[in-house]
Image (cartoon, rainbow, N blue to C red; front, top):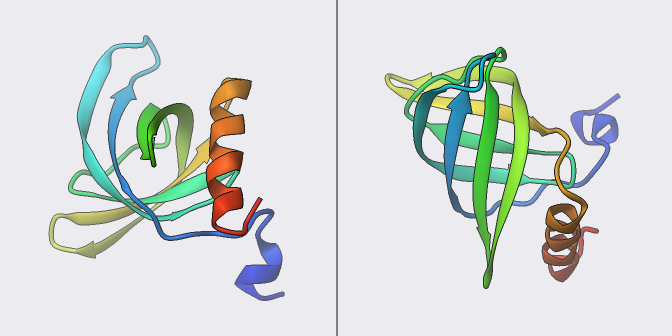
Length: 113
């Protein structure tokens, strides 16, 4: 099965965003800006300058045209691309229905929803 056949939703290259990583107790352990490498209904591939642990909850604020969407997720994979640059695959979790609706509208403008 090819990588494309394994995906639940199509991926699209996108945008800048900010993120906050929380530990198990809800305390902020890291925050920063990242670049979206691709985006789908179920997750995002993010380029960062810090690794993000799968044990942390990730809060994302993503600018989609005229709206900011706040999503919640967890890291499902991490790779080092070069010294100090990481690619983090984040799966969305328990995101508010209105945030997902905004994401769906944005993706539909790209022909993906």
